Image 1 (cartoon, rainbow, N blue to C red):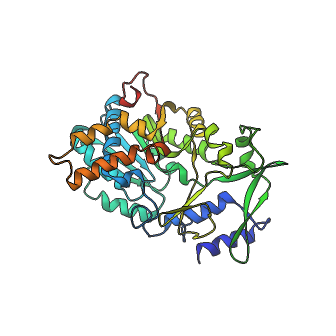
Image 2 (cartoon, rainbow, N blue to C red):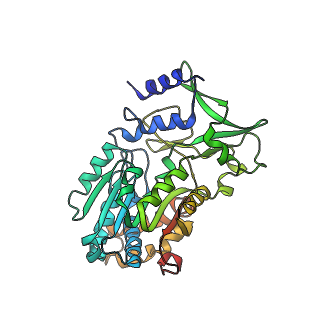
Image 3 (spheres, one colour):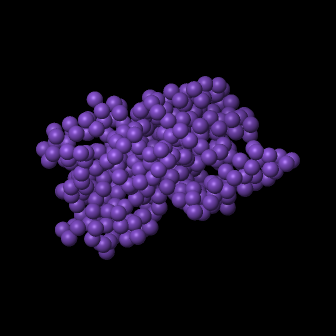
Length: 372
């Protein structure tokens, strides 16, 4: 049965003959039989549909590893943990482990690596990449399943929240209406309908001056997800890297049709109803909502900034100098320096991505590099 058939069946079996867009997105991305992230095909890199900062060059992972080492040292843990959520191919964790082994061998020796991965295919890729890792490694299929670990250390995600299924709502003359998905002879179509119950509280905080026709995406799983994060983390830090913005910038009239985007073979477009199960569907992260959810569960905000500023504060530029070869025009040196430029380019990754650092049960005034 194809993923399109599965979605059509759910639409036909629903009393309204339609399903909320969030349900459509969940099925298209995560259904075990044909969901995009569950399929055994490349998603990231040249042979996939998109690139991430982690696939640009290992220097991104090296910089994050240095941040993690600094955080570990600030906590004084004897067996620190590194948790990565939604690690995809395992490239980020693999490169970070190599760097940690070089720079903090005494902590690397006793560390725990915890990987939370929904996709069996991606879990297999991660196991292959990490097969030579000399550290205790555990896999979990969900954040809730991993919560019993009770770690001290760092929880990291890179482009995780943007792939959460989102509800889409539109401002009309009668107030906010939700986008539902129905079927047509040739595919799928949208209809506006009543709000699902989960949206009522989220929309109370929306600016009433937003114009008619304005669309926004709402991730109703943030509160529950932040609570699961807090249960997993006994003490330490949460490091979130993703594209998005604070609410007043995200829900702005300039983005009247929202931020929903699809990626298929390195082509970006805004139609989620084509290439179903064969393309990524994402929405910008509402960092205001994510910060509020974290604070309600004991995650204190330490820093929120653009990726370019964060990486520069954490020593990315120094890596171009420290690792340059005698001949700066050799291919490896040029690749490294080009990657550094790409990671901090204001018109690209550097300006699009945000970094949020939260802490739990950590003392005030810890002198971390990105806070200086």
